[in-house]
Image 1 (cartoon, rainbow, N blue to C red):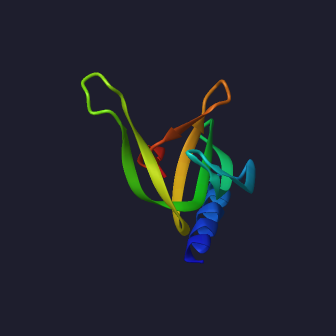
Image 2: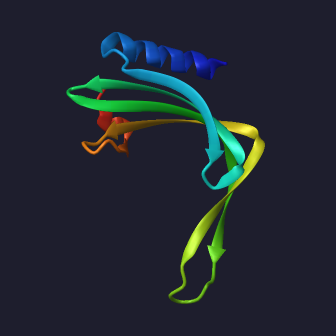
Length: 113
């Protein structure tokens, strides 16, 4: 519950300083484990003529990362995440809207608040 209060304080600060253009909540499947779902909340706002989106995602925690692929020269290797469906994790991401309408994730440190 402390996470919800923190999110509410962040949203209130953004609303006071910049004003909100949109907000919402929803659920979606986890990208690499479609049998699991994650919930998200987001707010969008304008700062210095640019549109930003702040997103908070709560979903299953990653407990292991497996390497999948052959160990021969020239072969490709990819990683597979292992999730714990009972333990949750929180992530906050910041996106900037590009001129073509797509969202690009940016580092929170570069946001400059």
